[in-house]
Length: 280
Ligand code: A3P
Image (cartoon, rainbow, N blue to C red; front, side, top):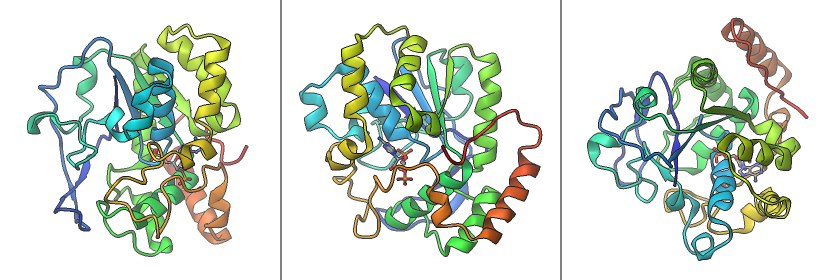
């Protein structure tokens, strides 16, 4: 079983009223009572960094193509621990529902973190916020960029998120830090790396099958992976499996917006050794 967690140091959560737009407020969660099983895997990402993609890869690596894949949406197969939003919530009791970084010392299970470059992540998040009624209204793109830079987002600051987990990797030997851009460049290589990290032996043929099954076009047309059955999303506004590209930010940022983001990025990331690619 893989658990998916969008983890953040400063935690933001939606006030959820049925499926209507909600206000954003600061929330400090508590999963003191959460008890992982030794064979659990935690997938942690900032939203829109490739959660669904990696979830499906792991699902196929562990369970293969079975009836499970054709009958159950990915968000039911891979539980969102922090979500209380039906149908994505895992059915944990209330005091177990919100993931906090304190989960790490208590539950020493393999963690797979997926990061995506800030600009593409921002664009993807903007479209997701437009089409998902459980998210606050995104407003105009020009103001959204500023909110993103200020970290006033559901699940907090992208900069804190990617850096926090990057630091954690130095002390947590069971943390595999992946990049969306690498997955996009060579999915097969990244599946090999995942298998090595998890100690999984899968034949070349099996791995090829997984790599082909998780290609964007296949996931986009598969109703169990494209979120088309999720009641909070409006596909008339934007699809969940939108473009799946590295570098789509170029279609959204003006030259001035891009420069402003770069300057802010330099400041926020100046002490970080993390390197992202904004094109491949
Ligand atoms: P875009 O909005 O840029 O298309 P998450 O699963 O964390 O919510 O991330 C969703 C983003 O990952 C979307 O990005 C989606 O299209 C992309 N994605 C999902 N599966 C993918 C795949 N197989 N190949 C490339 N991108 C994928």
